[in-house]
Length: 227
Length: 224
Image (cartoon, rainbow over all chains, first blue to last red; front, side):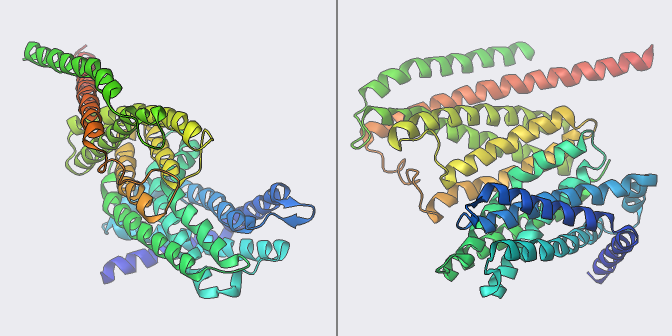
């Protein structure tokens, strides 16, 4: 177990170092997510006021789109100089490699979330932090579920043809349940009369999805990445 | 051996044909449902079609798991056959559902959770077929991974009806059908099951023959 954590940390550290040198994925995904918020405002602001509850959907959809962009790029990078093959040939548990890549994507998405939540709260005067623990819990659990499935699909598509098109085709039908729960959970928190029990229920549901999806992802990573 | 298989296929096809020929008579004799009347008779078609979609998803998911972990090509051929049937029966369910919804709920589509998740399942297996078609070499394994994920989504679809109280008739409708309606209903389920088995076997044999043809082509190329 300690060896798995050590390898995951090494992979994560490598990804952080690569990203910190160019900051390419962080800057582009953050800008893209902010653009999504702007575009959504054209659809959901009427007479200067946002449609009630739209903020929850805006946050989650912007995060999903930005996450998809980050996922594709995170594994595309590994194709240069056949780095992915080198990574997979390393005499370590493949699950640990997956864990490292997953943590890198979760970290990146968390940074994007800080910016998106800030802008949505600012533009729409949304009280996201009226119940901070539940809100952060929903975001964290949703991000882990989305990134868990996404990292596996992005990894397995890294060598496939048409990977840029196929990633969203595969990703959304599987992760939509997590997004539905995230949107509705956040909505329960930001409405005029917050429904904490409902928010807790949606959080529990996302955690259930996470448990199923992450178990499946770790279970299938090894055979899926074997050529 | 092939002749025997062919004969069995004809027998299965004949059984399915006879069952489908008898089904309209049984449905016509069944009493009207108390609140929805004649329109509720679509249940004899709509629900068995969903059962077959779920069955196809389980066959595809389990076969994909066997292919992924045991590397048996025959399991992959069964999986792709079942995936095509899942999409086919899903499309039938998604066509008959709105017809029923229009009369019962006054709208062609209602964003009720079970409908939404049924759409998600259909999209998952359309994605499976797209991946196989456009994914290039190695897409068989990738699609097997996707099918496993798709299969694990199914129980969530079913349980969701009871968890989220929605517009959709609850899952307790089918077990509580009266005897006069349950008979024709389960007859239709068996008729669709017979059709499903005929189609699955036919598609699997086609996949086997395609694989054999590929093998022969490769052998020919190596020799000449």
